[in-house]
Amino acid sequence: LVFSYSGHREGIKCIETHPYNPNLFFSGSLDGEIRFWFLNKKNCIYSFSDNDRSIRGLTIDHKGKELISCSDDGTIKKWDISAPKKKPKIFYSKKENFNSIKAYPFSFFFATGGKELLFWDQISFQPIQRLFWGTSSISKINFNPNEPNILASLCSDRSIILFDLRLKIPIKKIFLEMTSNDLSWNFGQISEFAVANEDSNVYIFDLRNTKQVKKVYRDHVMSVNCIEQDSKGQNFISGSSDTTVRLFKNNKPKSFDIFFTKRMKKILDIRFLHDEEFFITSSDDGNLRIWTKKTKAMDEYHHKQINKKKIDQISNVENLDMPKMIKNL
Image (tube, rainbow, N blue to C red; front, side, top):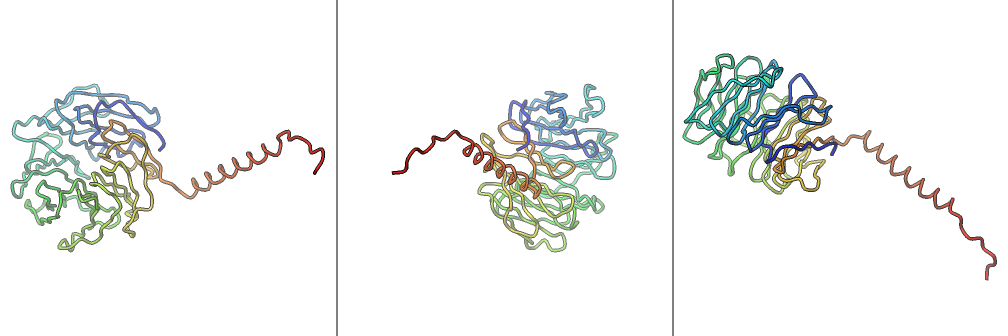
């Protein structure tokens, strides 16, 4: 653990890092508050409590100019990052409860998930396309970073639905035994995506063959709530209700590192920072925590420090004023 940020009064539901500014990130909590944070200042620079209910998702457009939030109160708000004190543009819906939001990677569009999947024009701030399959609500959505017309969504009926925005219809529906909580695309293999499930496992699927699971990763003992893959497609991190964060390699089914600390409750969201040697977690106790991956250089440094302490202890013992022996009987 490197550092811990406090300030939220309730659990932090979502985190979003800025795509171009490595020091800036945002958080949204269950009490409807959004906070702007600077890593180098180690404190909150702005906070807003304009929502009546919990923040469900945060996203930033591909130019890094606007922050868009969705909430349980049926509102979508668009904030100007360069002028955060300026009043946001608001879209209100009486019928919709927006559960997830994600910006389109290469243009001024974004998508929201709720009772149906809506595709929005960011400039006019109006939905331009509606997609749905069945009556179940959508809890999470994510665009394929290399093929952004492909979008994956998680639903409350334990299904994973794949959409192709060019066809304007869903293309595939996959069912699992339990509900999934989060998904993340593999940046190295554009056809693969990982799903965090309630059964404490992480599943890898391939678009070319969705009839069976490609890989299963096990180690968590409670439901996996969030997952994030690195830009090289070699490792991923997952956060769970068992209050731990685990680091996995894509070619091994078991985690090779675990992170936890005292008083930390279940992990709700997780994000890699820009250099990917550090990552940030949000938890149900209202704290944000910065962690660092353990590297060989760090291990060597810690071993040197331990050996140095041992040598100092031995030298201190040798330098003590010991009583002189008078006679050996």
